[in-house]
Image (cartoon, rainbow, N blue to C red):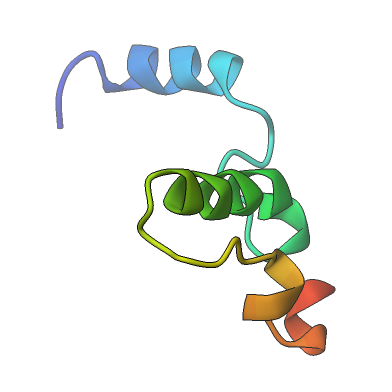
Length: 62
């Protein structure tokens, strides 16, 4: 334990939203789309993938 752990926790709680580590495709759609766009812009992928192309329909609703 560090003596300033509580202060760090409180500071982070103020900066972050309540769900600061969201799970699921829907909750991370913007970040996933940005990742896919950047991959294509940097020529890491020849095709500009969409979220619907890389995740099954069941996962899109998570």
